Image (cartoon, rainbow, N blue to C red; front, side, top):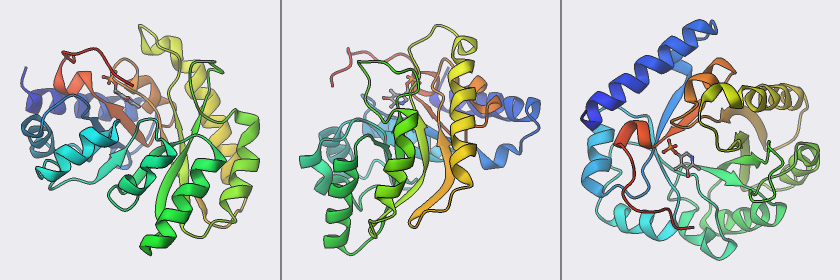
Length: 234
Ligand SMILES: *Cc1c(COP(=O)(O)O)cnc(C)c1O
């Protein structure tokens, strides 16, 4: 299958999952997880109509950006972000999905203020309480939102989660349901600089379940590009 055929299939599956949940599919964003795919393949995904590209590694993103790989689509950062790399990411991407500490939030705010812009971010939730994963524990979310309310150059737009690795989407339904509950609970509270618009959850193995459970953004790599050739580096 070509990248264009894959994108068409993923979009069809998103629309079907949205219909099962009584949701409008036009409110669901398909972010192509572009790691390890070169500029030419990224361009094919954009031409096929993905809503945005999401990169994991700063260096790889800068190299592809220099080649103009992302022209025609918004760029997101979805990987673990080190504080010393924040300056390379703020302003280049329209959304950072993976803010996992208050220190990182403050660093993004400082850099965004220096650049004279407001950076949109999501707060990453460690919904499976996995020791190997970063992210806020669900019970830490209110204090993270209260911290964000003090920062004028970041705007929290919602939540992101990477549930435990699973073979099928069904296994992760309980985590997506928990995310949906957390999102709804925190939507009602009013904080400055916080607008709970998006939940970013669902990858190749489980995006349809995530959409059934309320995801507004899915991050899909393998189902768009095929299997990655090289082992993942972090
Ligand atoms: C790689 C990656 C994805 C996509 O993974 P696939 O299983 O290939 O769809 C989604 N989110 C993040 C943060 C990733 O690193």
